[in-house]
Length: 250
Image 1: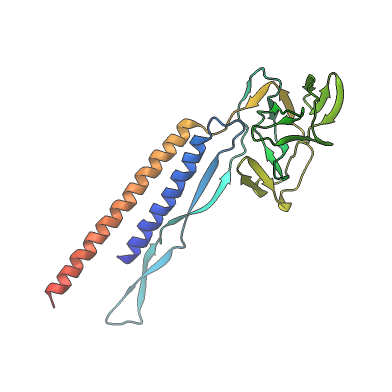
Image 2 (image 1 turned 90 degrees about the vertical axis):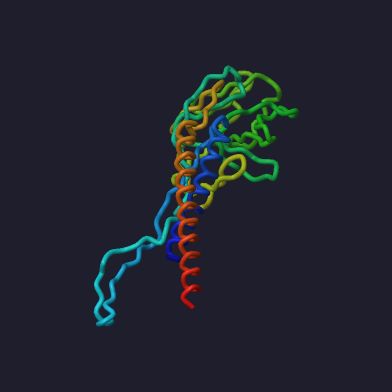
């Protein structure tokens, strides 16, 4: 009976985590370049169930197995390409294919993002909404306030003259990226390879989180959570009855 508490309780915790993940995806469904998270459920190791003969305690018979509940084995990020939408804003950039824009954040750390909604700061640098500077191979890109163009291979030209190439980071192993508030940080295991995609100016990549899929995930997790909580209440009521009966027999 107590095992039922553990199984139902672990189900409640797992579904609560799924709800948090789906809610985060919905909250960022309109964030350019956002990559949705997915939860991977796994069961605790199953245990064998044996029937013991009271007349012959040494003789047992295997009658099956029982699961100890479920847990969230891992949370991984889906890096599927989002749709590319034309905006007409020259500061908007989108990557078709694999790769990330490199942005120097305010604390001097480099983050990698697919969010290409950039603007021009007061010093003529191309920056994101938080003030992070878009990096080229020679450092932050400064347009000096003049017109600029970005070619499909990432070459930045200011007033018709090439000045730099976007520092687009292509990891060999996306699973080695760590999500941060405004992008991803790379670990040593991520590696790097050449960029083979294309850059589109005047476009953005929309989030790959589908609102309908996430709403369905929330409904499913809510119902599973409710089922587990109902099981906990039923087990608790049964144990209370057992305690009452034991007191009556005393």
